Image 1 (tube, rainbow, N blue to C red):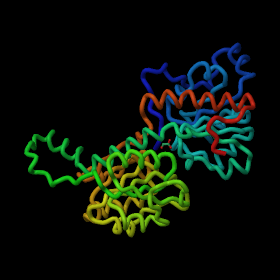
Image 2: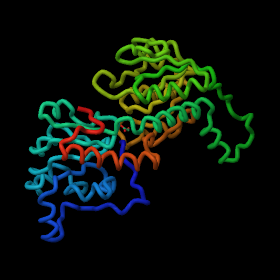
Image 3: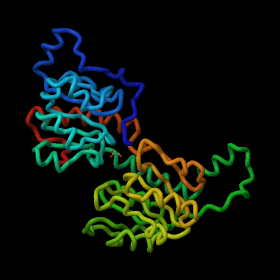
Image 4: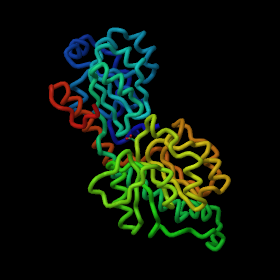
Length: 346
Ligand SMILES: O=CC(=O)O
């Protein structure tokens, strides 16, 4: 589950801000837009002054939203905006608990956790992280690729067990010159492609449509892409068309030496089939930042030495954390001053 790390260098989270402490405070808050925080405990620390003082923040993290709505009906009736974290679903049912809602701001680039159709139907605007995390995520994708292919983490684990004889390893393979297929050539995919060019990889891609002005070969299906490459890097968003697009057939086409890197969403891959293919040696390895059923990670991965795992951390550099804190506040401020959203989704 994408969820912003809680930065200990930040001021402590403002818990239970729905519990107004004094009448003065309540009077002051009366004129501020009601913004509901929908994320992990401590999520409120993403809004720092001056933004945190411009809105009346409601924190329901200790109660599921429907219970919060039952116990705080007046607040919920007035909520004009939701500030949510990736991985915290906002379904049509949940949105129906917020009749005055006009804006959703999510701290993620992906929006698969928000029912966008319902937002469109109700005229609710949505803002996201835009391209803020693209460079970090692309860096991580390439790092995972290099790690799996050159067996860096596996070697590290082995050395820590005092197996210092490097000849005991199965040989790694070269990153330079690899044929890498990128699935989803948006901003993250392009950032990955640029980095791979420096490694002299042969990049090709699949996406919904062929992109004009892109020098890389295009394959109209992931199956064709897998057939013609050694590595797949998944950078696309999750939707009904892309769910489980990487199935057993695609993995078999990638082949025994093939590697899959996933920095998109876990459910792009049929995870059960991935585990089977890894265990049976039908593909060579995987570098995974995302999983089906996050925050759980299927324990079968833990015993596989050809898999490198990362806890959905592609976006979690301190620089990006500070930048997203600003961006969330700026989107809220823009909306409530009747200006265009900074990073609109719809
Ligand atoms: O997964 C991370 C994001 O969607 O920003």
